[in-house]
Length: 200
Image 1: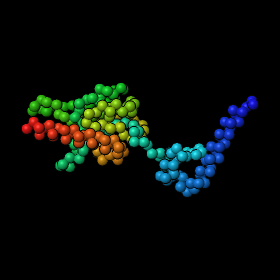
Image 2: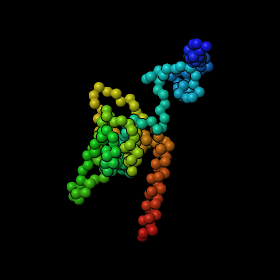
Image 3: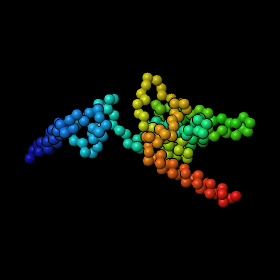
Image 4: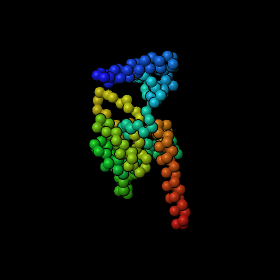
């Protein structure tokens, strides 16, 4: 029959339209501005058409969500920051748009490189959020962030102070990744200690 496809398409549209109101009735008082309703609307079980009332409502991002990277530091024993980055430069080498700049410095007495960056810059405006820097970092020092609300009227070039975030923040946004990386790091340290014990 001529026009059968159009009728079927309009039927799908009508069903989605009706489901929107049926879902609103079912979730009366809980659908908007509540974490439970937002979680339902971003799940596969949602029906109908819905609008996220951004910025009052925000859909939760998955753990593997990638945005501009940040540098991880551990809390030191004396209350200082122990930056994990050793300024090896692997992240800058693998970065496709070359948006990472690292300033290294040498110890004036020994002339050897200091295993911590003096300055670290990321140009967020040209970062393509690919995650290569985090993937190739051997020290888990650079991690992709979940903070995507960085729009501004000026160029977004983040310096080291802006990029540094504690390991507790990393654990809060990526718990599974943090646990896996922590287990790998402990296993390496244990193997290193066992090798040192066998050598002595």
